[in-house]
Image (cartoon, rainbow over all chains, first blue to last red; front, side, top):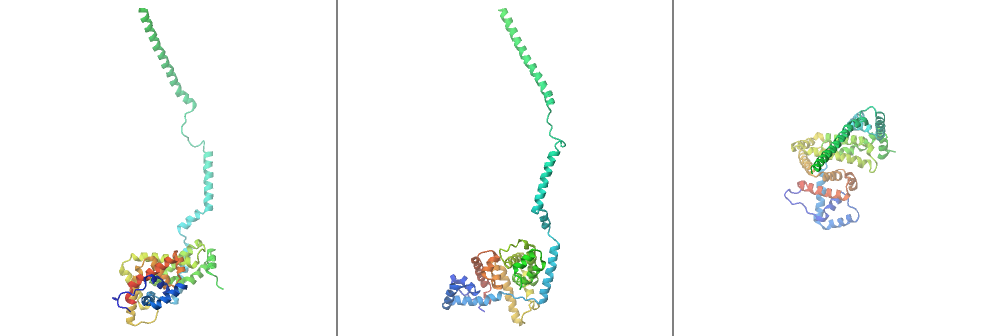
Amino acid sequence: MTDQNNPLIVPCKTLEEDLVLFHYGDLAGSERDTLQSHLNDCTGCAAYLRELGNLLPLTVKADEPAQTFWNDYSRELRHKLDATMEKKPWWQNLAVIFQPRLLSAAAGAAVVAIALAFTLGKGVWPTKDIPHDDETMMEALPVAENLEFFKAMDVLDDLDLLESMGSQGGAA
Amino acid sequence: MNPRDEELVASAQRGDRGAFEELVERHKHKAYHIAFDFARDREEAKDLSQEAFLKAFSNLRNFDGRSSFYTWFYRILVNLCLDYKRRQKRRPAEEFDETVEHQLDPSHQPSMPMSPDQHVLAGQISHKVGVALQALPPKQRTAFILKNHQGLSIKEIAEMMQTAEGTVKVHLHRAVTALRQRLAEFA
C-alpha cells in the first residue's frame, strides 16, 4: 500500500487509456504488442499497470447469497408476475378501446349517425327564421306607397313654381 | 437440448408463461449481481432485478429481436439501477453510511472468516469505494461496473448503453482515473 502523501504514479499520458484496456484484456493485435514492448522500457507505465491490478479488484464487492435466497427470489417473482397478469394497468384498458380495428368501426358508425341525423332531422329541428315571400311583400308595400307619395309631392312643388312664374309673367 | 433465449422469448410472446420463467432462471444470478454492484444492498438488488424482469415481461411485445434478449433485458435493468441511484442521491449522506455499515455486518457476507484488523480494513475500503462509485457520473459508473465487476466486453457495454465503443472506452478511462485518485491510499 502506498503512502497517502506520495504523488500518484504517472504513466505516459497518451497511453493511459490503452493501459486501462490492457488491464481488462480489451487491447488486441498490434496495439497490444506495441504496448507490451513499451512496458518493458517504461517504468511509469509498468507501475501504473501494477497499481490498477492492485486497486481495481478492491472495488468489487462480492455477494453470494445462499440457495434459499434464490428459491425465495423465484417464488416471489412468480407471485409478482401473477399480480401483474391479474391487474392490468389503466392505460392497457384504454388501449383495448383504442385498438385500430375498433377505432375505425367507431369512426364509421359516427359518420353514418351524423349523415342520418342531417337527412331525417331536417324538418324536426328549428332553423333560423327566414321571412317568407308574402311577409316580404307586406314590408315592401308601404315603402313603395311612400315613394309614390314623395314623387307626388315633387310634382306639387313644380306646380307651385309654374303658378308663381305665371303670375309674375301676367303682372309684367 | 436447451432452447435458445430467442426461442424462449418467441414462446413467451405467444403467452407461454413457463418460457418467460425459464428466461428468469437463466438470467436471475447475473441480473442480481449487476443490481448489487449499483445498489450495494442485498434487498435493493433483489427488488431492482425483479422489477427489471417484471418490466421485461410487460414489454415483451415490444421486443423486436434487433438486439439479443440479453442486451435488451440488461439495458432495462441498468436504467432501473441508474434511476435508483438518482433517487439515492437525494438521501442524506448519513443514510448512505448506514447502508454501507449494514453491509459490513459479518452475517451479511457468507465469505471466508476475517480477523478483526482485516474486517476493519475491509470496512474502510468498502466505505470509500461506495462513496467513490457514488460520486462518478452515471455513464462512467455504468461503464465501469459493467466492465470491472461484470467483465462484459466493450462491444456488449456499447450495445447496452446504446453508444459507440470509443465512447465506452472514454467513460471507462475517466472512471478509472477518478477512482484511482479517490482510492490512492489503497493502491
